[in-house]
Every structure is written in structure tokens, then in C-alpha cells.
Length: 365
Image (cartoon, rainbow, N blue to C red):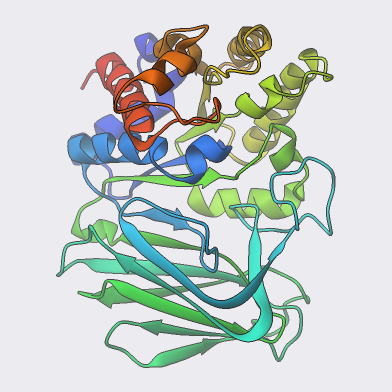
């Protein structure tokens, strides 16, 4: 590792090993965040830029059974009536037992039958892929039927001896297939899918987008630390991106100093399972209804990031600071939405290009 890499030391070392052919596994990134990440426009642009430079390791984490969800590089469908747990995924108060998988949301049948499908739009036709299906059965009779394009249906059940409610993973392999369908039955719930290329055929970068609409720093802290740590350890990221603050900027009755404590606790949880992982904290975007509070939240997160040994990227300043979201909205075509909180596809793409360019400018082979 090189001292000049600073907060990106482990991440950049992994990228160098990948680029020089000394690494045989993917370099993984986990992006925790709110609705800015949930649509995968911003994070998707970063993924695309890094994969162009270092190789395409695959799509990464994807929710299944989520009708209002999208992900770059895939078409997703969810047929039938589904239910989610927790009922308010972006909340910050404890819910159920806190075991919701890597992405913080479980999807099951409200009324049977239900079926979800993913169709990859960017995979090479001849690629060998691994599909890691996560599900949570509540009883031994719960099942998940999985079908990979061109193959027979495979029925997944709880592993023998596993405690009821334990998260289960099954990894399937395919060559040339770009579609996977899942149909949970009984009380089985889906906790996501990870799609990766076989690293033996060429390792690359994988970015897992874990954004949740309405999420705050308190959202991942409501999850069972033990259960989520096990899921994060399975992914073993070299970099964790922490992208919260826009919703906090609207919480005008909350003392912003709370966010420093929450960020410190989130970093502690991450490092208890991945002690060498690098971290990047992103500032909130500008927000029309919180012109004074947004830079305050930005400053709290910036100082807490430095205290925690993380890199910090000033999204607020990258947009142009105070009033920029209104200016972006008034452009034609607009870079911001009319709600004064979210950006358009064009706006998120621009942030993704700026962020990835900044990371790559700091990287030295």
C-alpha cells in the first residue's frame, strides 16, 4: 500500500493487483444509501466507469420481488401480490428481529402465487455467471423455485439443521443464460440476488447498490448487527460508500450532532467484520426546502468521515452549493426533479461521472 493513497489505500491496492493480473477475485464495493442510490442511476454510473477501467465483474446485488425497483443492466418484473418486511424499509426504529438480508428488505407472497424475474441487459452471451440466491424460510416446508433460462426448475429449501428463520444462500452457475426466475411459496421470503461473472474467466469490479427509499443513517443501525455482518462478510468489499444525509437535512427537529454518532457506530459495525475496508462518505445533495440545514448536515458528515478515517466527497459543492437544485430543475432538460429533493437521470449520471472521475484521478497504477 502507498501512503499517498490515503483513505483509499486498501481499495487502490486491490485495484492495482487486479490491473496487474495479480488478483484472481473481483474487487467489490458496497454502496449504502437512500433513494439517491435506490434507482441505481448515480451508483450505476460509478459502476460503469470503474468496470470500463478495471473489468466487468457483474451486476452485483439486486432485489427480487420489488415492483417499484430498477437496476442498471437489468430488466426486472414482479408478478402477483407481494409483501415486504419491514413494512417501512427506510425507517430507523427497530422492526421485527432485524434480519432482512444484505439489502435490508425481504419480499414474500402476500397472496400466492408470485413470481419475480431478472433479465440481464449487459451480460456477454457466452459469459459464465454465478447467481447467488438469498432466501429466508420460516418453516421446513417453505420453498423457492428457481429457474435459469434454458434449464429446469430447481427447488430450494432450508438446509438441514438450520434454525428457523436463518438466511439461506444457494449459488447456481450458468453459461450463456441471461434470465433467472424465482417463485417463493409458503412463508419463504427473498433477500436478494447477487449476479457475478466467473472471476476465473476474468476478475473485475462489482458494485452492490444497497439504497433504500427514505433511508437515513439510522436505517442500517436498526438491522441485526450479527445477521447483517454475516451478509457483508460474504461480499467482503474493499470499499464501502456511505451515502445518507438528504433525508436528515429535512429532519429539522433533530440535532445534527446525532449524525456523527450514527456514522461512527455504522463504521464500527462495518469494521468489526471487515477491519481493513476503506470507506467513502458522500455529502447530501442540495435540497430546496432545507437551504440552511443541508450545509450543516454536510459539515457534520465531513468531520465525522475524517474522524473515522474515511474519504469524503462533497456532493453538495459538486452540484454548486446553495440553490443549485433549483437551478438544476430550471434547466432544459432539467438535472433535478420538481420535488426539490431528487435529481433526474441526467443529474445522477453527471454526479456519477464526477465522482468516478475524482476517484480515478487519485488512483495511480
